[in-house]
Image (tube, rainbow, N blue to C red; front, side):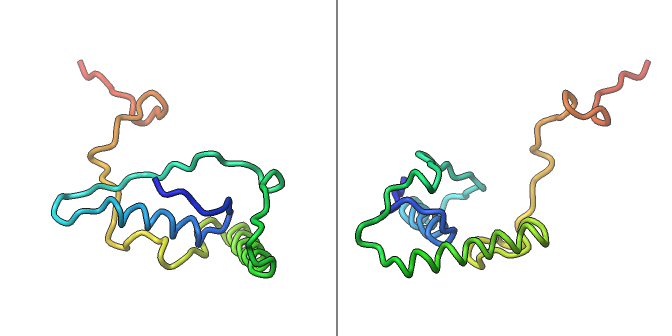
Length: 115
């Protein structure tokens, strides 16, 4: 687990923390599979205690940048604009053959008995 120095909604800081965690855990040699990231202790921005030592202009620029990123993605679709270092490798694809059956939620995948 890699804690952040201060609470943030800045995607750049979140990606940097995730990469730092991966760099701590990664060992060359074994095969790895895709995994998720869990974010804990999430709070609304209004409830956040400001960092006493943070540069206020840097915080304002970060918030403006993230608001612009969100606005563009709302207008043109999710993932239209992402950080270059946060995008998955282009050769990665889902392994559909390992997916669990969805016949409890998809009628087109319901098993049919032929007699």
